[in-house]
Length: 122
Image 1 (cartoon, rainbow, N blue to C red):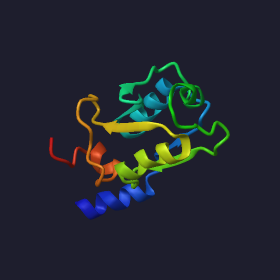
Image 2: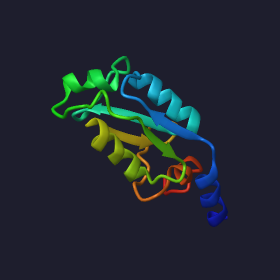
Image 3: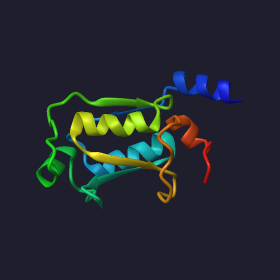
Image 4: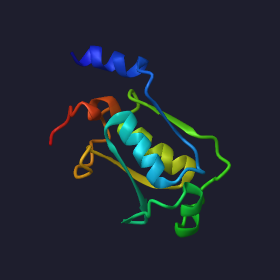
């Protein structure tokens, strides 16, 4: 079943696109809708306010957010750790991908599709 699910993740039309002008709460909701997982943004070690945009978060962090950067695209076949790194590399923002309830950080080594299906130790 794992091979079939991995193939489905590669060809699934569900795709999550990130634009720096979107509010964090909008990005989090769209991620939940696309993958049934929580996307949590951090300002240092504190959860960031949802009304901020990625560009506005720049003023509250030590890293620069490129507000003119092209959006990033995340699919179900993307590894969790790679997706989190994309946010850091492209926008200078720390994120964590968590289970639907937002309580458990999913392992970086699995794909977003596997995490959405709950294929990890709880």
